[in-house]
Image (tube, rainbow, N blue to C red):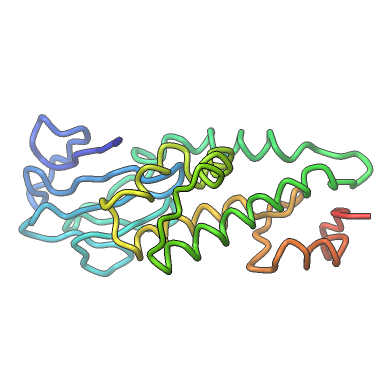
Length: 204
Protein backbone atom coordinates (compact mmCIF):
# COMPACT_ATOMS: atom_id res chain seq x y z
CA UNK A 1 0.00 0.00 0.00
CA UNK A 2 1.29 3.44 -0.96
CA UNK A 3 1.47 5.53 2.24
CA UNK A 4 2.71 9.06 2.88
CA UNK A 5 3.78 10.20 6.35
CA UNK A 6 3.48 13.92 7.03
CA UNK A 7 4.70 15.93 10.01
CA UNK A 8 7.51 18.01 11.49
CA UNK A 9 10.01 15.14 11.95
CA UNK A 10 12.75 14.83 9.35
CA UNK A 11 12.04 11.17 8.63
CA UNK A 12 8.58 11.90 7.20
CA UNK A 13 7.86 11.75 3.47
CA UNK A 14 6.54 15.32 3.59
CA UNK A 15 8.04 17.67 6.18
CA UNK A 16 6.02 20.66 7.41
CA UNK A 17 8.21 22.92 9.51
CA UNK A 18 5.43 24.53 11.57
CA UNK A 19 5.23 24.65 15.37
CA UNK A 20 1.54 23.66 15.34
CA UNK A 21 2.25 20.46 13.36
CA UNK A 22 3.08 17.30 15.32
CA UNK A 23 6.16 15.16 14.72
CA UNK A 24 4.10 12.59 12.81
CA UNK A 25 0.83 14.40 12.25
CA UNK A 26 -1.01 12.28 9.66
CA UNK A 27 -0.60 9.19 7.52
CA UNK A 28 -2.15 9.25 4.05
CA UNK A 29 -2.89 6.06 2.12
CA UNK A 30 -3.68 5.90 -1.58
CA UNK A 31 -6.83 3.82 -2.07
CA UNK A 32 -7.37 4.24 -5.79
CA UNK A 33 -6.14 6.48 -8.57
CA UNK A 34 -8.13 9.44 -7.30
CA UNK A 35 -9.09 8.70 -3.69
CA UNK A 36 -6.90 8.82 -0.59
CA UNK A 37 -7.43 8.08 3.11
CA UNK A 38 -6.08 10.49 5.74
CA UNK A 39 -5.60 9.38 9.36
CA UNK A 40 -4.72 11.73 12.19
CA UNK A 41 -1.93 10.31 14.37
CA UNK A 42 -3.37 11.64 17.67
CA UNK A 43 -1.93 15.05 16.88
CA UNK A 44 -2.13 17.77 19.50
CA UNK A 45 -3.72 20.44 17.30
CA UNK A 46 -5.85 18.27 15.03
CA UNK A 47 -6.46 17.65 11.34
CA UNK A 48 -9.20 19.47 9.43
CA UNK A 49 -10.95 18.37 6.24
CA UNK A 50 -13.06 21.10 4.63
CA UNK A 51 -13.19 22.90 7.96
CA UNK A 52 -14.23 19.88 10.05
CA UNK A 53 -11.88 18.21 12.51
CA UNK A 54 -11.45 14.55 11.58
CA UNK A 55 -9.59 11.51 12.80
CA UNK A 56 -9.95 9.42 9.64
CA UNK A 57 -11.60 10.18 6.31
CA UNK A 58 -11.37 9.65 2.56
CA UNK A 59 -10.64 12.68 0.38
CA UNK A 60 -10.01 13.76 -3.21
CA UNK A 61 -8.01 16.56 -4.80
CA UNK A 62 -11.03 18.88 -4.53
CA UNK A 63 -10.96 18.80 -0.72
CA UNK A 64 -9.10 21.23 1.56
CA UNK A 65 -6.88 19.88 4.34
CA UNK A 66 -5.26 21.72 7.23
CA UNK A 67 -2.87 20.19 9.73
CA UNK A 68 -3.72 22.46 12.67
CA UNK A 69 -3.39 25.92 11.03
CA UNK A 70 -1.03 24.74 8.29
CA UNK A 71 -2.57 24.05 4.85
CA UNK A 72 -1.59 20.88 3.02
CA UNK A 73 -0.65 21.36 -0.62
CA UNK A 74 -2.73 18.80 -2.55
CA UNK A 75 -0.22 18.89 -5.41
CA UNK A 76 2.20 17.05 -3.16
CA UNK A 77 -0.32 14.21 -2.83
CA UNK A 78 -2.00 14.01 -6.21
CA UNK A 79 1.00 13.53 -8.45
CA UNK A 80 -1.00 11.13 -10.67
CA UNK A 81 -3.30 13.77 -12.19
CA UNK A 82 -1.66 13.42 -15.59
CA UNK A 83 -2.21 9.68 -15.47
CA UNK A 84 -5.92 10.23 -14.89
CA UNK A 85 -6.21 12.64 -17.82
CA UNK A 86 -4.23 10.36 -20.16
CA UNK A 87 -6.59 7.50 -19.26
CA UNK A 88 -9.60 9.55 -20.30
CA UNK A 89 -7.95 10.72 -23.51
CA UNK A 90 -7.08 7.13 -24.36
CA UNK A 91 -10.69 5.96 -24.13
CA UNK A 92 -12.43 8.98 -25.60
CA UNK A 93 -10.85 9.83 -28.93
CA UNK A 94 -11.82 13.11 -30.58
CA UNK A 95 -14.32 12.88 -33.40
CA UNK A 96 -14.54 15.31 -36.30
CA UNK A 97 -18.17 14.46 -37.11
CA UNK A 98 -19.40 14.48 -33.47
CA UNK A 99 -19.84 10.68 -33.54
CA UNK A 100 -18.76 9.30 -30.14
CA UNK A 101 -20.57 5.98 -30.35
CA UNK A 102 -17.36 3.95 -30.03
CA UNK A 103 -16.23 5.62 -26.82
CA UNK A 104 -19.77 5.71 -25.46
CA UNK A 105 -20.18 1.91 -25.71
CA UNK A 106 -17.37 1.44 -23.19
CA UNK A 107 -19.44 3.20 -20.54
CA UNK A 108 -21.77 0.19 -20.36
CA UNK A 109 -19.10 -1.81 -18.59
CA UNK A 110 -18.24 1.08 -16.25
CA UNK A 111 -21.88 1.40 -15.19
CA UNK A 112 -22.52 -2.34 -14.77
CA UNK A 113 -19.32 -2.91 -12.82
CA UNK A 114 -20.14 0.00 -10.52
CA UNK A 115 -23.70 -1.18 -9.81
CA UNK A 116 -22.69 -4.79 -9.18
CA UNK A 117 -19.82 -3.86 -6.89
CA UNK A 118 -21.91 -1.31 -4.97
CA UNK A 119 -24.72 -3.80 -4.37
CA UNK A 120 -22.35 -6.44 -3.08
CA UNK A 121 -20.59 -3.98 -0.78
CA UNK A 122 -23.90 -2.72 0.61
CA UNK A 123 -25.12 -6.26 1.24
CA UNK A 124 -21.81 -7.41 2.77
CA UNK A 125 -21.50 -10.07 0.08
CA UNK A 126 -18.29 -11.63 -1.12
CA UNK A 127 -18.00 -9.76 -4.39
CA UNK A 128 -14.48 -10.68 -5.49
CA UNK A 129 -15.58 -13.31 -7.99
CA UNK A 130 -13.23 -14.16 -10.82
CA UNK A 131 -15.45 -12.58 -13.46
CA UNK A 132 -15.94 -9.33 -11.61
CA UNK A 133 -12.28 -9.15 -10.62
CA UNK A 134 -11.20 -9.51 -14.26
CA UNK A 135 -13.78 -6.95 -15.36
CA UNK A 136 -12.97 -4.35 -12.75
CA UNK A 137 -9.27 -4.57 -13.55
CA UNK A 138 -9.98 -2.70 -16.79
CA UNK A 139 -11.07 0.53 -15.09
CA UNK A 140 -9.23 2.66 -12.50
CA UNK A 141 -12.13 2.19 -10.05
CA UNK A 142 -9.80 -0.47 -8.80
CA UNK A 143 -6.25 -0.90 -10.08
CA UNK A 144 -4.25 -1.82 -7.01
CA UNK A 145 -7.29 -0.60 -5.03
CA UNK A 146 -9.08 -3.84 -5.88
CA UNK A 147 -7.36 -5.63 -3.03
CA UNK A 148 -8.14 -2.76 -0.67
CA UNK A 149 -11.85 -2.89 -1.49
CA UNK A 150 -11.85 -6.62 -0.77
CA UNK A 151 -9.85 -6.37 2.46
CA UNK A 152 -10.78 -5.40 5.98
CA UNK A 153 -8.56 -2.33 5.91
CA UNK A 154 -11.45 -0.04 4.97
CA UNK A 155 -14.85 0.37 6.57
CA UNK A 156 -17.89 -0.04 4.35
CA UNK A 157 -18.60 3.73 4.00
CA UNK A 158 -14.97 4.26 2.98
CA UNK A 159 -15.14 1.51 0.35
CA UNK A 160 -18.31 3.05 -1.05
CA UNK A 161 -16.66 6.48 -1.08
CA UNK A 162 -13.80 5.13 -3.20
CA UNK A 163 -16.20 3.45 -5.59
CA UNK A 164 -18.47 6.50 -5.90
CA UNK A 165 -15.63 8.94 -6.52
CA UNK A 166 -14.08 6.82 -9.26
CA UNK A 167 -17.51 6.31 -10.85
CA UNK A 168 -18.03 10.10 -11.02
CA UNK A 169 -14.69 10.49 -12.78
CA UNK A 170 -15.17 7.74 -15.37
CA UNK A 171 -18.93 7.67 -16.10
CA UNK A 172 -18.73 10.80 -18.23
CA UNK A 173 -19.73 11.99 -21.67
CA UNK A 174 -17.07 10.94 -24.22
CA UNK A 175 -16.97 14.48 -25.61
CA UNK A 176 -17.46 17.06 -22.84
CA UNK A 177 -16.37 14.77 -19.95
CA UNK A 178 -19.36 15.78 -17.80
CA UNK A 179 -20.52 13.26 -15.20
CA UNK A 180 -23.66 11.49 -16.45
CA UNK A 181 -25.18 11.01 -13.00
CA UNK A 182 -26.87 7.80 -11.99
CA UNK A 183 -28.76 7.41 -15.25
CA UNK A 184 -28.55 3.73 -16.28
CA UNK A 185 -26.58 3.05 -19.44
CA UNK A 186 -29.73 1.93 -21.30
CA UNK A 187 -31.34 5.25 -20.48
CA UNK A 188 -28.41 7.07 -22.06
CA UNK A 189 -28.69 4.85 -25.15
CA UNK A 190 -32.34 5.87 -25.52
CA UNK A 191 -31.33 9.53 -25.35
CA UNK A 192 -29.02 8.89 -28.33
CA UNK A 193 -27.04 12.09 -27.80
CA UNK A 194 -26.01 14.58 -25.14
CA UNK A 195 -28.00 17.77 -24.77
CA UNK A 196 -26.56 21.15 -25.90
CA UNK A 197 -24.00 22.63 -25.90
CA UNK A 198 -22.20 19.28 -26.30
CA UNK A 199 -24.52 17.43 -28.72
CA UNK A 200 -22.22 14.39 -28.87
CA UNK A 201 -23.86 11.47 -30.66
CA UNK A 202 -23.90 8.43 -28.37
CA UNK A 203 -26.06 5.94 -30.27
CA UNK A 204 -27.71 5.64 -33.65
